[in-house]
Amino acid sequence: MMLCCVTGTLCGNTRLLAAKRPNVIVIYSDDQGSLDLNCYGSKDLHTPNLDRLAAQGVRFTQMYSPSAICSASRAGLLTGRFPARAGVPGNVSSTKGVAGMPSSEITLAELLKSNGYVTGHVGKWHLGYTPATMPNGQGFDSSFGHMGGCIDNYSHFFYWVGPNRHDLWRDGKEIHRDGEFFLDMMVEEGQQFIETNRDQPFLLYWAINAPHYPMQGTAKWREMYKDLPSPRRQYAEFVSTVDEKVGQLIGTLDKLGLRNDTLIVFQSDHGHSTEERAFWGGGNAGPYRGAKGCLFEGGIRIPSIVSMPGTVPEGQVRDQMATGCDWYPTIAKYCGATLPDRNYDGKNLADVIQSKESASPHDHFFWLLGNGKNAQWAVRQGPWKLLGNATDRSDRQKKSPIDKLFLVNLDENVNERSNVADQNPEMVAKLKGIHDKHVASITVEKAQRATTK
Image (cartoon, rainbow, N blue to C red; front, side):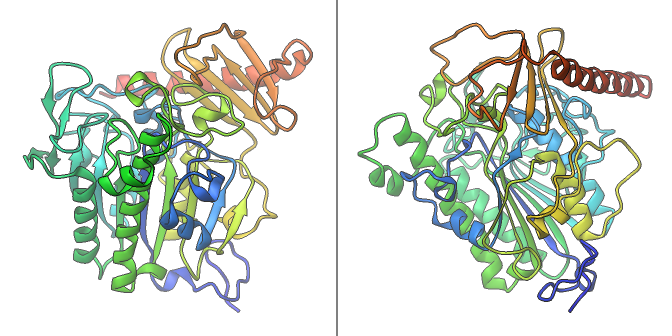
């Protein structure tokens, strides 16, 4: 029997982490819906590699993204703080020269780098387009990918808001590799990073830009899904392309004998897109209302898996509430890194990972999406969830008014169709009070940040 340095409990088959600090790979997919893996219940998808990862680790059923849009979610992941607290309440512009997440934030890369890790970013960034706010300015020793929100995967141009502009970078310098498939390049870059740094602890942030539009699944998967109706067809093609590329990346760990030495976190940044550019949908939110861009469950309840054979239990499911902000303190714990002195909204999940009997570390969680009086917000405490200025993105082509304050009990109404605010005024007041407390705290930090510039 060994004493596990993560949980402080005896665990027979768990190696002592202090003996060798684990490598860390964070795989962050883009616009992947709540149930969009076979292991989450989507029967029309082929995702053997991520299903295998779940079989070799722990799969979460109540994992929430830090936000319902790309930049904010990534800020929450990389700082362990509410995105608004980290200075990114919404999406960062995909324009060169525009700053993003403040450089005063201490990213996961900066934390682990200060603890002797080599750090690499591969893929999507979307947290700033200036030297100080691009990956090399935020703690990454190396960086390869695009700085904006999305690119065409062959020309590497950002087309969605003019003027059309090229967006492919290595270590802060623009490079050109026209015609090469970006997801293949991501695999190649990730493999090279792992092989180069195999003899020292490393953090690889592998932020794959799919199944985000443009949905450009490879020919193999287009043939496999040719009989699925649109838009599920295009979406499924790209999800399986993601799965294939993840399998190739993880296969490198197996080949090098690093699999048991590497903590792998896989997670989507938020729910699936129902934007016109995504053919108005294609993802599977199952029973959940909402999608990308809103704080109903379908916008923020997402697939999430953690795996490290011999350290993390295998083939298990956790139903406790957790959030993407939690990976920062959790990874820090596994790596033996002490958190800097600041406000963290994420909580260490190590006990939950080890045991289904452990309680969620969260008394509640808070989301704030956007700025101003019309910003969307939500508070969840226990089964209760209160949404303010709620928007439903389930179907962008059909819009219906939603009450300004929308209260649900998720144990009784997981599809969030019935507003019970009028019947529960005390709960509304309680959750609104939590909202007010966090807004005040975030406002103070924002003012402090402004005075130190």
